[in-house]
Amino acid sequence: MIQAAVPWWANAIFYQVYPRSFADTNGDGVGDLDGVVAHLDHLSRLGIDAIWLNPVMVSPMADHGYDVADPRDVDPLFGGLAALERLIADAHARGIRITMDLVPNHTSSKHVWFQAALAADPGSPARERYIFRDGLGVDGAAPPNNWVSVFGGPAWTRVTEADGSPGQWYLHLFDAEQPDLNWENPEVFDDLEKTLRFWLDRGVDGFRIDVAHGMAKPPGLPDMTNPDLEMLTLDDDDPRFNHDGVHEIHRGIRSVLDDYPHAVTIGEIWVFENEDFAKYLRPDELHMGFNFRLVRAEFEATSIREAIENALAAASLADASPTWTLSNHDVEREVSRYGDGATGLARARAMAMVMLALPGAMFLYNGEELGLPNVELPDGALQDPVWERSGHTERGRDGCRVPIPWAGDAPPFGFSTNPDTWLPMPPDWSALTVERQLADPDSTLAFFRTILQLRRTSFHFTEYDVEWLQLRDDALAFVSGGVLCVVNTGTTALPLPDGELLAVSAPLVGGELAPDAAAWIATD
Ligand code: GLC
Image (cartoon, rainbow, N blue to C red; front, side, top):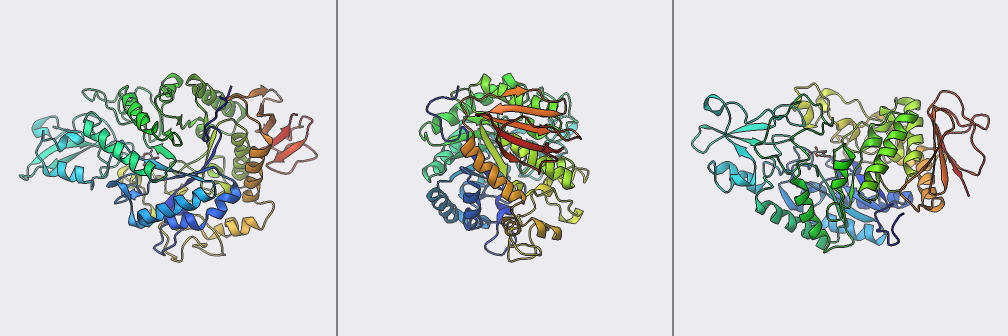
């Protein structure tokens, strides 16, 4: 059963804003926080409960903000601290909460701590804040172990010592500009506590915690057995992640959060064993954890059902609220993932109805409500460090980060006054602008507004569970919150059970549910 005193986040709709790509108010071609303020009407119309902002702290932007040089200030590119304060005030006035990204696993290489570590000697306290080791082999010329960076290439970079000699190596699970912190050093937690309080005292309503399964490293840093893992593939034996010591760190974070009972933590937890995943959600650790099963599910009835059952089971092991997401700034947009074109869009709309019918917290990614596809960008436009680090074999994540088209008939579609946007916008997005879709009752935006509204008014969630019905092998059907959700993943129309039709993702065909479509039917 859902507890009587349900916290605000338990069934909330979070809307992820990728600030670089949302809206630019100062004409530099990169989005900023005043751009979010300027478009709060759009978010109010959707009826979201909270915004999750990707990192806006001071950063050289080697990984677009996930390389933080000063965790307690906002980068001037995004408008500085004053712009965030304006956003918090204006969003709160509309009843929209603001959650921020927090990056505790690593800092930027430009952080004062890392600069001090580079200037200091091996073994010095300054180096102890990061993970420096001597190399192996003759003259320490080989990295300390075989770990690979999630972005490609080795996870170690060798430094030059103050006397000019080839020196130690430092660990970076991501880009070389993102050195991993040494979480065994108590200074690291003390500093994070300051950061948490800094933002919470300014009215922030919580944090999405980046790489929440990282941070702690196993003693001796044993080799990986499978160093050929692709990015975002999972191997629960991977020594780089999910070391048991991470739970102590989460308990520390929670002890700070408990001083701010209004605030939530949501961990990015790429851990696939449910028992292991649930450990992060114990009562003294994170409030919620991202579950990525639905992102990985094919548009196929069994695959979707397994993902849902699994995510519900994982959350229930910890008595936590389940979380659902179909896309974010790291994965290919769902329209493209499900087959692109009209089919991809139809399936993405159907999957939005699946997700929004489920009990728990929802995470929408900006542009999802417009049905944006991934963009094939030319080589010269690519900015994700993955492109360089993979030796130009992986194109990276830029294709899902292209700026939002707001209005007008040509790029930059009201995103900026500057035609030179940080990623180029496809001319054919003229059909997908917010302006165009607001004027069209059949648009994907109109559809999202309808289903988001219905989620608030027609669903009555009393438990974190759903009841499955069997209609046909190539169909999915479940009752949740008093509503029957039916999805046709097959190739022929599907007769619908009786009942009041609340919503459909595509027009019925002869009174039946079209392939690649979903329907909501009232059950009481
Ligand atoms: C997380 C973020 C991703 C970032 C990485 C390193 O996976 O979602 O965008 O590149 O962490 O911080």
